[in-house]
Length: 324
Image (cartoon, rainbow, N blue to C red):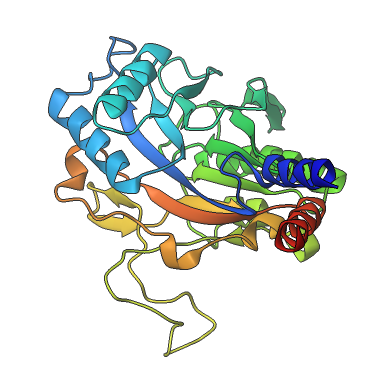
């Protein structure tokens, strides 16, 4: 009997996760680091030391376990950022850097947790006006397991609003969003309860066609985490409950027109949305944040619950120990 109880207790610890708990809290962030380029390419300016330092300060304020990055330079720049964060006390030992069709800027991840699986969507394309175009930055997809709980992240940096000669920028952005939505639909078809987040710089507003395409509708609709500043704002919009709350949730500043807007998102599958801790999700307020980037980080916190099977074994272990 004693051996049986020991086995049950050990199984409960293993299935409950590396911390030996039925629940784990983890934090996911996204951040466009605005041309974090440290080596000459395409006549782009190199990231100045003061700007690099402000990026580090902003990430430290976010305290992420996993962070998706946009506008990252070469992998050497990512490794330098990783080393600087570690020296400041934030160790994110696992990296993923995706190179697609944009030679200068990329999407990437830094993570405290190892990646169970990496899927590089680095050759996505679409037809527009009879012409084959590519998703410039691609989509980076990673899967992470925390004991019995797993989740996936897909980060994207959609086409900017800058006009280009090859096609209409808005149509290009919409087509990129539709390509990404096909990946989302495939994941939900395979597992409607899958835990995943689609996050990054979508370069458009919530009611725009590209973001609406990503959000979707019906049972496969994604949930907008939409955190805001921790400044005391709370509750629904009391003027019109159908509108978004009037909390401070902007993520980007466009200096040419002096406009603040929300174009960076963390969209959640129905399964993962159930574990969102809204009270501990926020946009960090960092003095002189704009010295680092024209974007601000978006931070979400989740409470991962063990699967039903793991919870059942943990309960049996508790009963066995209580009456042993």
